[in-house]
Length: 239
Image (cartoon, rainbow, N blue to C red; front, side, top):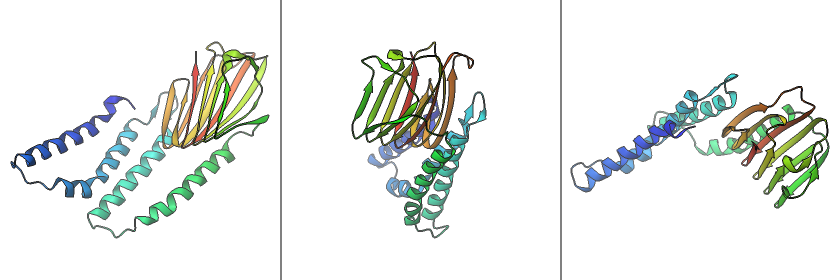
């Protein structure tokens, strides 16, 4: 989302500021607090519609993850607005009861649908795993950041001919991977209440998916990265 996509938020802020200014000089007597308390779900609707407008993937058409997020946000905005206008009788606590179980289900689906893990597990559990300073040997493996951070620099890694698979999971944590520009890299993954950035292509929100690659697919050295983030982030950059 570019800064130009946020014009509607700026317009709302300007309108609120103008109303408060007019009220302060007793030119108008608009109960701005009441209007905000009733119509604030319109912000969710505008946000969802803006996501739909921007939900185009240059290569593959519609971005499915962005469409799902936009649909959820728009539906939530409609329900809350209808409730505030007394059009429906809805217990808002039901949303909270359903929200986190659904988030866990979506995160579990990302494991079920994702590729099978390979190699050993490398954990950053409330701590850090740093492979950016010294030389190291690249092997297929699983990298899990739980309330912690993982940093990998493949420019310092010994990479022999073949195909390598890195399964990256960021759960309330972050994973940063730097790859050489002359290496064939294929990235795919998803984020739930988080964000992923693969080789300059990023997405995030309630549910998002991203796929990006660089280099020839028939190269003698291929790195496949599959990432999943929940309330965290994964960043793969080429340098």
